[in-house]
Image (cartoon, rainbow, N blue to C red; front, top):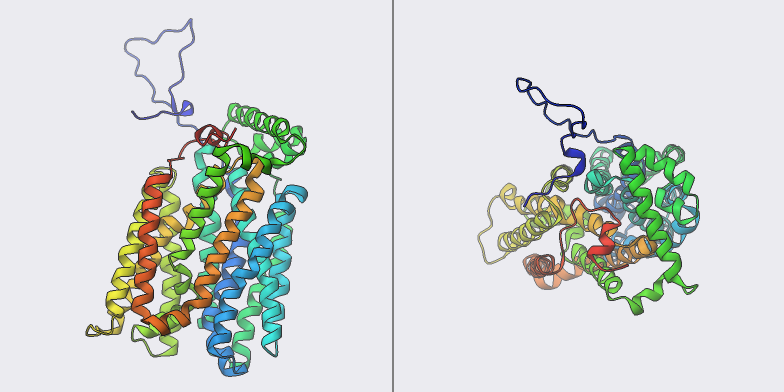
Length: 484
């Protein structure tokens, strides 16, 4: 049976009023969605642009670094993937930082890392300094991955939470796309300047962005956790679709905070892992969905797009970088589809379509890359990476973060998101630090068949283990997963 939200119901007539028989009944006026939380979530999620840029700029920069500094394939493999391992530091600290300093200051701290890291990379004269700059940027990546979706989830009303929590993913992919554009635009510079300018360009917006973040409100849930209920109520009034919804959200948050204080018993909320199966189930889901998101090999295309396209028969460097830009546009455009559908269609259908599409695209890539087949024209062989990126971005890319952020209980959201991000970055690091060695050993086709098997396992996991969460408040999740 279709569910109807209260704010969409027709208003009742007053007791003393009566509609005239000849009068037409006016259609119900739909409640207007509040745009203020959208602007707040956009500003917070802009940090994700820097995150995507810093991770993916190596895709094209590695070509010129190898020529300028003599960096080997093995060193390129480490430099490309190690940023994901370094991001573990930021991911594990982000929960602690966000719970103590607040969500806003944690976003500002991420921007500071994105200023220092790329500048160090752009001035590097050797491998050691490149690794140091990659470490600093990696810490910022971990912070950004955790805090942007947490803030968006906590600031958003239920009617638009799926959309707003998808924003960090669309901005990550905007950053990836901009890094590819940077690779293409600056490739015409002298070799010793081109890759340095590519890195330095990522540091330019950080100061302005950090200043903008300080103008947005703090998370109402964090304020409530700190006992600042009047401030929390003020933020909820600004970010809810109606005053009644603001009051209801505050009551639900207060109830969760009160139950957290009573259950913690001075020993910390993590004791619940030993006593509450629902909490263990939620954490297991978060870790598993983040594992599958990266183990399916998407970052092998993000960081090694030119190599994948080169294996497909494209030989010109300008054409490689140009097609890489188109891959970035395809990935970002697909996320717009996910943003439009997640609050209408639901999380499960998009996740199932995404994992199934990824598996099919990977098998197609494997078949096209097989040395036993006659090689088609290069443009035709370049199609599978586009389909693979599109399938990933229409569901699994953004919704892994949406789902993880909304099912974690308030008392564990910061730290739980940090653990989920740590799993995501570990698997991304494993994929990106082994991809060159893997395809050199088992061929490009063999690598894609392996990733296809992981995508099939992800489809089964989504179908069997993930309930639908569309339209539920964050506090409702505690009932759904029995984490109270």
